[in-house]
Amino acid sequence: MGGLGEFALIRRILSRLGTPAAADVLGPGDDAAVVPTPDGRVVATIDVLVEGRHFTREWLTAYDIGRRAAAASMADVAAMGARPTALVVGLTMPSASDLDWLDGLADGFRDEAAVCHAHVVGGDLVRSDLLTVAVTALGDLGGCAPVTRAGARIGDVVAVAGRLGWSAAGLRALQSGVTAGPLPDAFRRPEPPYDVGPQVAVCGATAMIDVSDGLAADLGHIATASGVRIDVDLDALRGLGTDGVGDDDLLTGGEDHALAFTIAADVDLSDVCTTIGRVRAGTGVHAEGRPIFGGHDHFA
Amino acid sequence: MGGLGEFALIRRILSRLGTPAAADVLGPGDDAAVVPTPDGRVVATIDVLVEGRHFTREWLTAYDIGRRAAAASMADVAAMGARPTALVVGLTMPSASDLDWLDGLADGFRDEAAVCHAHVVGGDLVRSDLLTVAVTALGDLGGCAPVTRAGARIGDVVAVAGRLGWSAAGLRALQSGVTAGPLPDAFRRPEPPYDVGPQVAVCGATAMIDVSDGLAADLGHIATASGVRIDVDLDALRGLGTDGVGDDDLLTGGEDHALAFTIAADVDLSDVCTTIGRVRAGTGVHAEGRPIFGGHDHFA
Image (cartoon, rainbow over all chains, first blue to last red; front, side, top):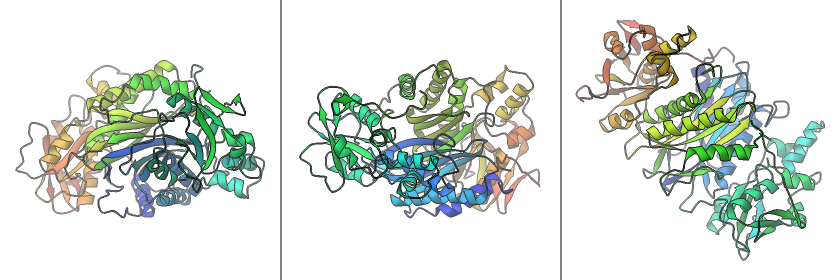
């Protein structure tokens, strides 16, 4: 690690993260950070990315990895209807990682957080043979009730904001040697629709989830938690894809971090999302009358 | 992993964690947790433990690892003068880990959190060849200002609550084949003085730190951040050790998670801590007139 000790490395990272703008934020450099929570509640979630499992350095720069890892956690915050406010990051990394690489990673965290006007407020750095990135994201509900997976009501529509299947198709492209184009770019740099989470929460979304395991599996979580059946309209779903994105990508590709939610049918959100299904009585997720299964299970 | 899929594993873990008592806590099982922050601020910190670096399964049960990992993060919260309220846990672990082992780990997180009336409110679980445990702890300041490392004033006394050097001596005992006794037990099960953090914050502590890198290094952080010199009284320090704990353990052993703080000399806290030094004009940390160095640097 360029001969720098841990404390020097941390100082180097901190110098790239910038200082949180708000005077009442205590950022990195102490035992813990202090983040304002005017709402009187805080939303908290953690996602862990592991090299070789979630990403390889062959296809992703350090900057891409930082942005992806931050996006994965901040999308979970948005899926509660909240606005991401702060990140704390736990890194394990080989000592052979060079300083430019570490700089890129820190810049990636910083820039993805900045999309939400959030900041990296703390972290931990440990030498390890394996690169792992654990990102905890905090968020603010702004006075709204959290939108869980359990509130879908029979008669609600199911809507999706963001891209579906692009990242999965992009991974396939990279695996086949195609490194340029919108699909590989979508794999490298997911663009979760962060603003849509709080926006549809205010409009009365009844259930919401970050699409990280694939739409079929994640709608399955809503169906199970809410005790309902969800019918997906494949034709409508295809509008969220693009050239090279197949039905399987749409239904099982998760790393775009789209937001899927349910809401009363008379709420017009056509400018921010696409209606792709309906909540019915019953169980499971169905498309064209057949039960669909999807997502991936790390321990399967 | 016993043939269970990720979702089944997570359900199994959740069943052991119990339900947070407060009705306004949204615990595990959704995209993110929601934790009350009546203070209008939240304290947040992350610690990552890596197998082979911070612990081995030879000397620690899964339950011990869970308790140690939770303790490391909650001690950081206490060192800000705050009360730990919630944990989110990111695990990477080999699929060969058996279910009993995972149960023990979950129980360890739960029971250490319970010492502070805190709860595990969320997590992530990823298969990996390497076992790593990332614990984010959240905390509540209860209306007090956070106690940073930067507030020590010339003339303050330096005090420590908790054990020093026990864990380091216990590790040495384990390495030499001694597995029973108070020192190995201290390595397996640190007992951070959680309550002392908020207590001395109310009493006007000017700077505070969790002793995780060793007392010399951690007082060094306070000295640097506060722009002062700290003189340590080795004789007073020896009262925090026990049979088998040497001066080097006292000055460089960190994993007991003691709390070290500075406070005006006229505040009587003799029932909760031991005065071990003095804040003076100058720089660095000194004992018996000599500068002392300590702690370890993971990337050195």
